[in-house]
Length: 91
Image 1 (cartoon, rainbow, N blue to C red):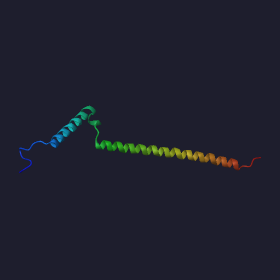
Image 2: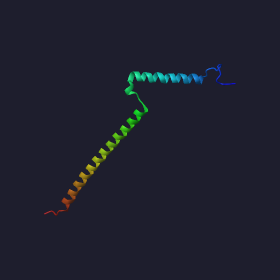
Image 3: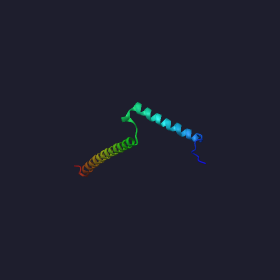
Image 4: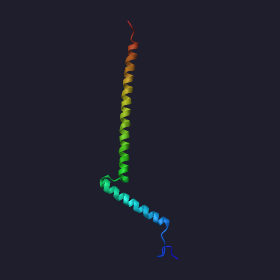
């Protein structure tokens, strides 16, 4: 006896999957109508946004490291001037 016969009844899971599939289709169509084809979220778009965010964070990190290096160099220069001034005898 085949389970796929013509007298097979619809079960709860079959109906749930059908409703879920229909809901996804409706949401997809609605998103396309509202947002437009160019603004739809895709896996490729999400990946590209993540790459851009990583690059932006890396650029900010480099800028911060550059500023810290400048501050450290300026502080070292001030300390050298103080040391040179303190090493001179007072007349």
